[in-house]
Image (cartoon, rainbow, N blue to C red):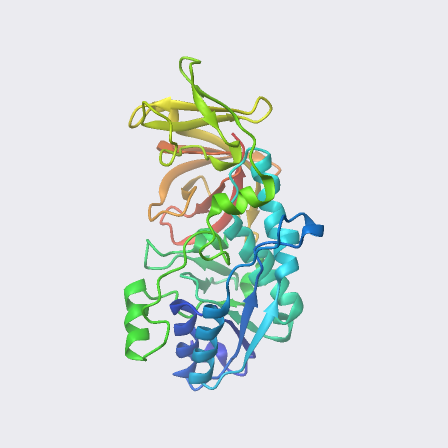
Length: 364
């Protein structure tokens, strides 16, 4: 990594978590002292922007940890406020999608629009490289094209969250811990006595910390009760509080008697949630489905044989990709996939699940 960094101006996105803390250490052991930046995000806008009572994500502990790490390694730390950009772009994207009955991924768009977008516009443009604590790697092929590549830790690999970034963003990105597995990162942090060494990984939406996803959605969209219908029989089994609180393939937290139940369909116009009964109903699976607006990270298009992910899991699923033109493809998976939902990103990799081509939105 040292040759790549020679004479480079480097910005580190330092969140206060263990991963980005070890990123700073990785530079420090090379004798480098990059500038560090903590991105400040408020989870709720003020009422004039559509929020209901201005509720913010707590950041005091995060910033305290980030400050301690930056100080330890003699790095400057600056807070960059991206509150308004997060609301205008990521939250609006998320709420528009869930209101339409789709299943968005806010973290994917947060990387594209905030970490490598709004931050770049505010401060990142002054730097040659932007370093983050993502579990991902990069490589350059014989033609000089830079690729987003998977991490050796299949559980923590985050290439699926990066699959909507632009080529210019990838060209400036560097992932110093991408070659590690999570346990190795923890070991480094413990050995170096980093204050974040034993800090738990964040859960839920990027930047929202302890805020529950349903509370996040309820804050903006409220509730809209409707019928829950058994898909096979048309029998009414209960009432939902809003289609946006449920995702295709969901099987936990339903609260309906006579279960288990799986969400298999949403009728937005009629405000009906369709469910199937059983532990693993066939209606919860799809093997063939279309994607549209395929975003190629570096302009390279995938071949026929691919692997894919439709959610953040360790598994890469083998499939065949059939081009339809204009960024549209039909996916033919080798085996049925559970919980394929409109609005999800289908992330496309090569057959060896090493290089990530990009992602497209599922449209079924």
